[in-house]
Image (cartoon, rainbow over all chains, first blue to last red; front, top):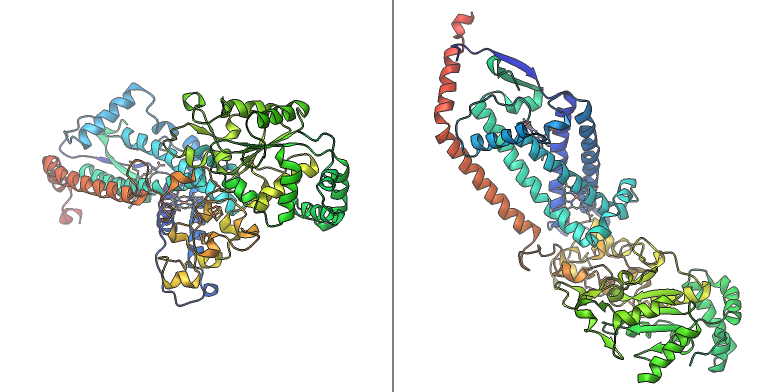
Length: 227
Length: 372
Ligand code: HEM
Ligand code: HEM
Ligand code: SF4
Ligand code: SF4
């Protein structure tokens, strides 16, 4: 180990990835809060006549609006997975070769069993994170499909009609709603663990993980620059 | 015995109905089929000339609530006419004939009118244990259904039982109760509900008789005319829903004010039916108007999405008291504990690594003086 480390500044997350990330986080936060309220509306003061208030309608409107943001944002990110830089590329999410699976085991060893790491650390997503985002992507799709399937009949939305087949497939709208609601908790869990892990990596590796999603930059020791 | 070759008008006259009764019936039929009263003359013409197709009404695993509903159609004469003149070629609960006589009557109709008769089915068909749970005249329901369906010009599945399986098909579905549409390979008109609204049933039969074809159906085989909108979309309490004004308990002040029943488990937002428009008992009322939430009785599997008096159904596998939220909250708490434990463990097991990095960094960081 050389006495003085030289770090290189690397441009990892391009603008569309960062924009996607924060729009997504915002949309999901809004969807989660409004969705929870749709499922469990709170009691308001009952002083006014119905014609003077519309809060539940507004909550639902926000949910549907954020639903559109969520959908289009996801589509843009998917596109970027094919044209973006190598850190954003689709193949970073799918462990297609032996090396990728070995990396996943390595990450589990270092981060869960907390043994000492040896080799270089990935600059973009580590392979385990990539795989988890890949699974998450399907859950995003599930949420979008069930959401728009429920939305279709109340809106005549084209996207709603495109997802209409989900209802007979799952049995009835009651079942679609049940799972659409239950998945809310996946996002709560995901966010909790995800944000923790970002902070954890930042803390342990000291490469500016947290701020990387803001400015796009990460830092890496020059002697380790072989992702 | 089937009365061959008679038009509806001829049958009615034979039974002692006046011409005026007949015209009244035609007017109702026209409106029921969505044509408006001006079409009644054309309808009368059709019913005078056209041979009346025989109708068979089969009963399998059911509670007869569909029949009970049907005979209470708001226009008593319509039900009379339909029962007197149309639907009684075979109907176990309403026919006079019994035993071999009745079976022979049905067999005669199916033979003489192959490809022409209308088949109305009430009840689901058991498929487990070779169908022994429902046998009529020594034959299984499935056998009887398939035979009758083969020669039918149109098949109507009455109620949730015949459309989806209803309570018999609720988990764990011990008899293997199956919907009609899954057993016959012909289009089936599904008229779900537990029971369906009498006037809706009458309108559908009239439609088939009058036009000689099926009404327009949606992707689940339900007549669009009655099942294209949710109870919620036509509910008069909807403004309270949008305003977020909900009944919190069946005996609270909000219930007296007639607020929305969403939090009491109303399934109106996911139930396709005409209750809020056609209403029940001759347009008197419908469940929500009487202060009770919709149970979703016209939806596939509505028995399995309980409890009825709570918005969120029980989460599968976690007991009746659980909801997606209780399960989710527990998992969330577990994850929070896991994360906290991991944070503590990190500070213990990676202490040396972090310490080394800090030492190295401090060593390498130029002192502020040096920078100057
Ligand atoms: C992260 C994504 C999402 C979350 C966490 C979420 C959460 C929820 C929750 C908890 C409910 C309440 C279900 C109930 O108990 O009745 C709900 C309802 C609903 N959501 Fe979502 N949702 C998401 C995305 C979407 C999307 C993309 C759409 C598409 C427009 C959508 C459309 C709907 C609709 C139509 C309802 C029913 C609302 C009503 O009855 O008025 N959701 N959502
Ligand atoms: C304070 C909050 C958050 C911070 C600091 C943060 C930070 C980050 C960072 C640094 C990455 C890249 C990490 C890696 O490659 O392993 C990332 C990726 C990601 N984050 Fe977050 N995040 C936050 C909240 C959220 C929320 C609320 C969600 C959604 C529920 C979310 C969803 C994602 C997804 C899907 C990716 C993969 C991005 C891609 O390449 O497409 N994040 N986040
Ligand atoms: S009472 Fe039921 S159907 Fe009527 S507005 Fe409320 S939730 Fe909808
Ligand atoms: S209000 Fe709902 S439960 Fe009641 S009859 Fe109509 S569809 Fe069935």
